[in-house]
Image (tube, rainbow, N blue to C red; front, side, top):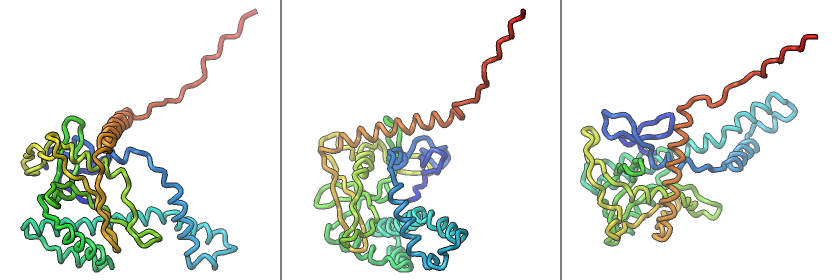
Length: 290
């Protein structure tokens, strides 16, 4: 995950402030989307089982309940370790993509250093495939890591890239992907449409984080000239860009709005503290006198 200057980790998820000297005020786009429940129990169980059966210590632990319990404890965190490793890899790939864009914008960054970090982790092929896609699609960056704000709904976020491709303005989000059994990049989830349309429907764009200077966001599509909303799956084998269909944007925007309300009410409930309190039995009635 990128680390925008105005983003803050809070008890209610990532939130954004208006300047470096102000407190966080609104949730991030990704925090809002995360309000949607996702059942990962099947995947977590699969990861734990796979970790256990591949553990070289398993055969020597048969017959020892204590050793087996230790292996089970170790395997139970397999999904968490995989998630953290994938997030770190995604950060490295995103950083490389950002450095390529900023270098093309003449901002004096060093893509070679970012590529070297990928190489240290055996991930050079992500950079290779990204470079091939960048050249093939003739990407002309307009801005990278663009922080935007929507006052009406109440959220902020940072877009990976604003660019021109084929003469069209595009809002792009990069997703680092592993490979499926077919050797192809795993598909991007439909929830990315909410992320992209929320970015498009922003009202302001950050100009100066220190001073808290914002300007009107010119890519809302209110004039009918919608930017292309593109998710780019970056893998070791290929880069697969997919476009959000314009006919789906309204429904995904409404879903995003509803999830924003969920976040607000969840925060309000949390701020109330404990909502239940124990109560005792009713007082015993006095015994009748004879």
